Length: 189
Image (cartoon, rainbow, N blue to C red; front, side, top):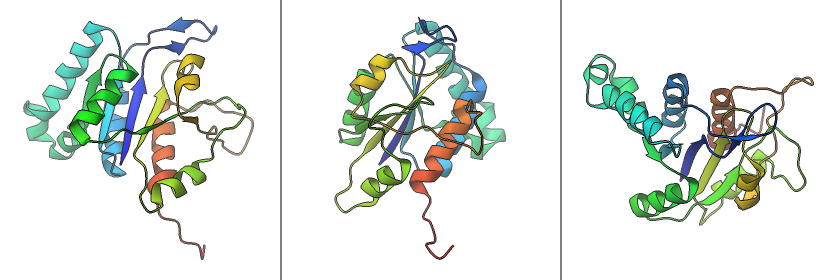
């Protein structure tokens, strides 16, 4: 099983300072849709701020039990994947309780670091017999704080394009990452 978590704390701002970033409506919609498309079990929005947690619950409620879900059943199905947690440890606890597993945690970053795992190698691990369950951590703002990277079971290599520009939106990074992990490649291509 694959789980996605969007981390709002601890993350970095452009100056490298530790911050708590704000939840954005667009992230909720787009990441939940990617998670549903690629078969993720759940999408966790991780923020310690009670007001932000309540905002997420209100937005999700509009689409899952309010008029939004009636008008757009496809969006409802995607938004039903969203759960809210105050921190990463609570996210792991929630996964353990709801899905009866302890996921291996992989953090993502746009930075090149030693010993990063390729997306292809992680895909092969997931596809192997007796495969592991994975929680993917994606950072908001200017990325995950080093303490998150250090506490993860592994850190994935950056998603690279064709040039030297590397500043994807987190929504794009989640979609590309899930595609790399869940899509079955035709070796004849």
